[in-house]
Length: 396
Image (cartoon, rainbow, N blue to C red):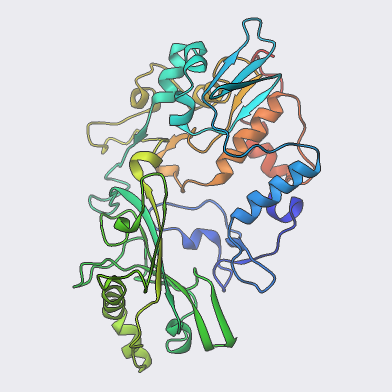
């Protein structure tokens, strides 16, 4: 709704067939939407990147008179003793505000010393809780391989051979690319044929572009090692900088992995390796900050209902949700971020920006802000109103 109704950005189906979203999610997890996944595109129909939505929102904020300050890291926050205002510290500078909404992940919020000291001990313990139960009755042993990072990799080919030689413009290989196949090169391969941008002079002719060759949490070093630093997820390898033959090695692994497709098509393999490799690496130690618990008896170490998972007797999802939304018990300090999720592993369907937006909307409801006219009414009732009563007893 934000992208289509507010920003009015052009979109196209992620899968050219516009299949239901739930068909794109690897089992046993179930995506809870039947509409097709879409992505933002540019005037040529090429992927524009999700930063387009962020840039669009920033432009809208500024058009309405809001101010954007870049490069200003929040170092502390505190609620005034009389509860009338909030002091925000940015290193040696500080501002006082009547209302704040902090879009902060778990480590950043817990790193605000004064706000943490003002937060009730039970809420702090809930904020510190991190859990990812893997019940074997739901996820068979070895099925979900949680390595050091979640890594995505794209190879750029001057000839997009999956178009020109295989006519393979959608789907995955293997069937669930999130579980990549091993190769004799020691490089795991999992392909999404439709994910990367491709430009063609004509349909299936004169094509060049990016192919997603890996997107998984399995342990590997070939792609992960291209990350320049722990704080920079983007890594790029060009043919000019490739002194060790990585691009040739990747090409050999790709050709080995999808040899059955070339044989089935009766097509010749392309001789030229990719001219660029682009990776995104998100280390799980820095990324996994949610609470996914399970009361199933098959959980190693025993079932973990939420109160046991977090070591807080009587803790419920409702209490967790409300306490992390308004951690100091005042509506003047609200928090909204995807990190603040607590749900069962069995209902997990991925880490999405949707959750950050939902928490922000629930906070606005606490402040008496009604449903925006552009937001679907049934969705609002199910995802916002039912979780955040407008007459909450949180102090103002």
